[in-house]
Amino acid sequence: MKKNRNIHILSFIALAGLVLSCSKMDSKYSDFIKDGPIKYTGKPDSLKVHPGNGRLKLSWVIFADPKVNRAMVYWNNRKDSINVPITRTGGTDTVNVNLNNMNEGTYVFEIFTFDSNGNKSVKTEIVGNVYGANYQRSILIRPVNVASVIGKDSARIDWGAVSYKEGVSSELSYTDLSGNYHERVISSDTTSTLLPNVNATTSFTYRTKYLPSPLAIDSFYTAYKTVKIKGAPFEVGKTGWTITASSEDVSGNRRAVN
Image 1 (tube, rainbow, N blue to C red):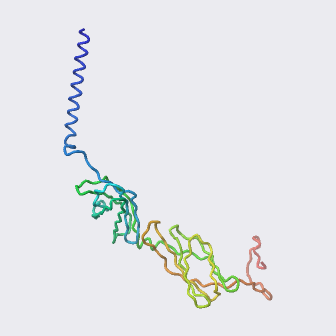
Image 2: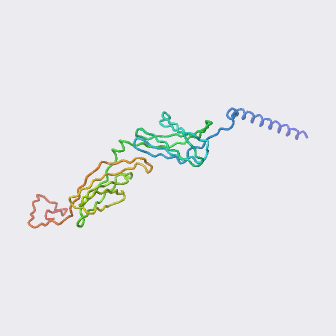
């Protein structure tokens, strides 16, 4: 009987200690929830950066939370920011934010949404680039390996490889033998281009277009270049030729008579 009484006493002491401990824990966190649980608004979804020339655009989607009525966008370690009003339609809404007059470089953007009661979302972060003069100086025109007449009145351009994958196409213009002006857009995966109704007196002008990102809102272009079309190759008769070389590579079989 005495043993059972001791067990009851120990159980009571343990229960009292647990209650006291929980009371102390509640007192630690009560200040944080005295006004009720923290409410978060819906954060931006499908956030994207659309880079441009001295500018960029941010876009995201709001699927739910009809209470969201604005957003704050921060960059440059929160030294710069913009307040973005948001009008909800009751369904899925897309928000577009245009940032102009931006210096060329890489930026980290932090975005929070808010409702009319001041509740805000958790942070959404994205990295984006702004392009400008430095990028413009780095792009190269797509090379032309050869442009020559084939057949009677047509020419073929054989293209070299574009220097960077961002070079998406080349814009070409020329005037044919009838005086008609033509403009062509040549994809960068095209290896050769046929120009009809031209001859060896014809020239064409072209430039290469660069898109620094598939989502870019601006394109960059190289300077124009003019290329003269070559005449068709023909065999030159060697009758009456004489050898005048003063040296030859005998061991490599690159003799003057060859």
